[in-house]
Image (cartoon, rainbow, N blue to C red; front, side, top):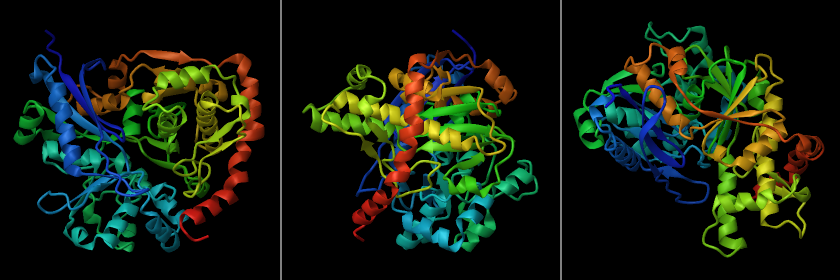
Length: 528
């Protein structure tokens, strides 16, 4: 029996809550997963009950640790989570309200108020973010305005990963990558300070926070990812199966933890994190200061690796588009209760490239960068009577690939954004081999797919290992990992067709439809 230490990575994601036990070289030895318990009280609203999230985490930890022959080998645990979602706590550490989901749309009035009051360019100059309604500051303002009594009792606002780590260790803290998604971190101060907080001044945007009527004390102390918080508490050890010697470390934002596991840390590489949402993540040595970046909807922030930054160009509903179509196909097109992905992919593979002229605009939640438009809508273009289920599904996959290229090409126009020599893909959507082949062909670049669908959990586990001293530093941790990769090449005889479609058709869809979508939005809001 091996005596090597084991590392646990927890991933509280949009779709699932997972706990995976890893060897230091990245080999998974035990795992457990449950669907993330999500409530949808009304259209465009979604939230998580904090206690349900905690119990889901406890359950997967207990099941995963129960599969380990010697749980005493478990040296560390760290948590990654979705961004833009936080738990408000009172002075007795009890939740005062639910955790508003990152994709919840109720905070549009607060985002519009920030635009009028603070200004989008000023917010970008401070935080490095485009103003979007998903960010934590918008949620806090909604909470204050609409739930004044529980808000008045709130003394702490913990991102989901921080909340779980707090329940495990009893120590409140957040990392810079999750703090970057609050719209309350002063990225300039962080950069200027060299990530040092020895003077006791954390780079929260205190002036901005006070200006919008909130207290900086709501936000947790900032620590670099991988900072050791301490051992699991006796109560947490009892319910999770983690030994009392297990060290809890600060985790981070799920996509950025995935970038760490994939080795995407330095400029010249790009991570394509493909899940419910999709993120194109390019590492930076310095944040971009051009306000045009924010006006186009791109965001940036701090990496989980100290001294490194990133720029994001994302699709808010990449995997969600595929799941939406699976539900539509199963419920209304073929009269079945369910249609599996294999069936949809097989049908789409029989359709010629170009989907018989049908194009899909994947803006089901909002427009993606470089269009900073929360009122954007999705669309099928070019429908005919020949557009059956397989045609439409292939059009969706092609639309997702076109969208990724569109996001990347505009992003590469900014100085300081290096054209990626290597594109590394992780996440559940990489299992869709047809999508990956289409994407490589549309980009006309090879894509390296890591054969590890749980890269986020591995990234969190690596951070835990750093906190427990299992790895000397980030570089040695990355060198230690042994993750198999598959190279997906473009299909040479399809490149020209996709190039022509992208240039002549796809790039024109959103600008042509924007006036119509604005009218549709007014209709949905009852103002037309």
